[in-house]
Every structure is written in C-alpha cells, then in structure tokens.
Length: 168
Image (cartoon, rainbow, N blue to C red; front, side, top):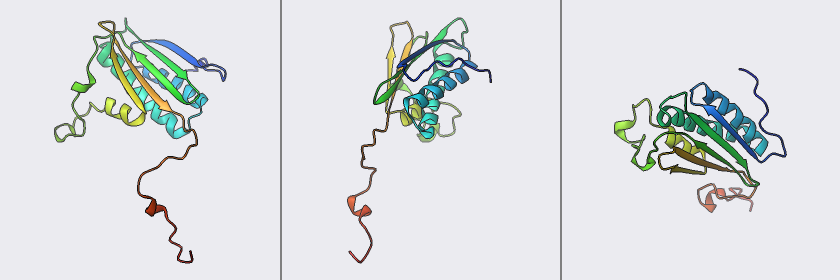
C-alpha cells in the first residue's frame, strides 16, 4: 500500500478530504480513519469498529450514491472533540431514506449477500444520521464517543455481582 501523507497532527481537530468516487479509495478512507481514530484516543478494537463503519459508508456513497461514477467525488470530514469523534461522509447522489431499507435480520433477508452496511454502522457507532441534501447528495453523520472512564452499567442485576464468598 502506498504511503499517505499524515492528515492528522496531535494538535489538529479537523481533517477533511475529497476522494474520487472509485472503490479503490475505500482503502484510503480506512487508512485515514485508522490514523484519526488513533489520534483521538480510541483503542485498537474501537478503531476497527470505526474503520468498518467508514468502510461501509464509503461503499454506500460510491456505489449507491454516486453510482460508481468517477467524475463524482466523496467528501469526508473527521472532527475530534474532547468526548467524541464525529465523521461526515457526503456523496453527490440522489439521496435515500434509510427507514425504507429492509431489515437484514428478517428471515427473507438472512441469505442476501448485501444489505447489512447500515445495520453494521448503527451497531458500531453511537449515533448515525442521514441527511438528504435536496438533490445535492446525501450526508451521513456518524459519532463515536470516547470512553471517559466513568463506569456504566453493563447489564445484569446488582445481585449478579455480589461476592459469593461465604465468609462475609
């Protein structure tokens, strides 16, 4: 893989890039995502989840939005905030309504080879929004919050976590 210029320095908070609408640029977007997510402070597992969300969104923008038309482009923006990473991806297509997408978990869709991208993005990211730009394309916003170290309930009941030591 070719070496990319470092789009992110520790004191940067915004990275923007415009890529030709070509599936080979999905890898470029993934590499930039990995660097930005690492700079933002995400661990390796979270970096991979964020990278997968960008991968799926880029494929959607290039393939579905721009119809694989190399005369069109895909715009990416990464904003690092103190508590989250915000990613925006914009194509030049006609837009779509994600509420009309079939559920990939329903029986009739389980064996389909495609149709899971939005589901994966929603699974990996904390927030996901789609905005139709009135014939000027579609913009997807994805947000991943940084782990602030504040303990959260991870499910279950408090009794599950009680000591089983009979000497208490």
